[in-house]
Length: 177
Length: 348
Image (cartoon, one colour):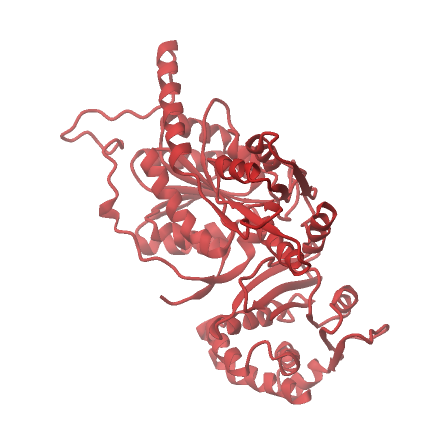
């Protein structure tokens, strides 16, 4: 099985981080993984995304043009990636910021009010982990345990005090699906 | 050994330090900035020198000096910056000073853009600067190879007293993958009796790139050419996958080889017999393996992130024994797996 995932959103929403968490957790769980960022020239205030591959096979192309999983955190990201998800794929979108204008009936589409749920936890910055939780519950790419191990590696030591909050956000997203 | 996730550029920098690099000079340019950033933090920890020079021209000449003094020295840049370094590289090649030059290539020509590119192949493998000289050119296909090949580049540079280049690209540099890092190299094991280290109790060591007397210049060039023949005979490196039963062999390096590999997987699912040959050294180029595959009746499809450069070397190696097709994209674009797959299906 090969998961080809794109995480996309505004700079600052933490889409690069959740991509790295998926990749790191995949590595910890014995999978072949890659992570590639793709910033547009409009980086400041614009849309950023990263491509993550988690596979039982050695990873071929690290750059993904036809993902089977997408986490879209803002409107431009949804509009860009909704049309290219492979049929049968999973799309999680942040319904706090995104209005779904057109939809597709050949995908598993999950609306997650990520900002509201994160704010309930007292910190709107963990909206990315809420969306990630919903995505993982649906796709089983990696486990919550894997994400916990990945948080310890990916976050710098002075941010480790935020790991419990991030895990709470992850579980909140998982509970939604 | 513990696996960790690293960005290609950072893995390359750490790999260089572990291979004994103790001098780095460079000048900032995207998409290689993680290399000097990492070096600026790490070099002081190993008593090495990190120096942000006033220009690329200064940086390469500082590497010339440090390499001449026997230090494992490197510089890194991206395409326009590598163009600026060419005069220094030609001098270093003539003076037979070992060093490593890293090009994390971006789109050109001119100031170009920040997207990934393989349009510096000619510059890397055919000279780049003036005169009849060669670099030993390595092309990493994974982040692990960023580590492994920079260590090998330092070793081969020393062994042949020749500048070596890592030709990477923006995607390879920015990508994160799991890596296992090697142990730190013992610097005491690196001996350079030819280096200009101060005469003390030996005769004079001279390093320069000047041959004003015609017979001197002839001798210098003969010596270089003899060395290049030895490198061509001994240092060709490449990897093959699924070529034995293949009707069509894809030829690609670096990021393109990864895209080609995925396209090969899709084509194999459709029952098409497709293989892959990935040059790891771009110079010396794996001519003989390609000639052998051509003689065995295989066709070729060369995939590049340029409008076609390496394809010329494949055509030379195949030498009309078989058919060579090409798929490339202009700089600014990255070929997609689907595009390469479609090209395969047109051919087979």
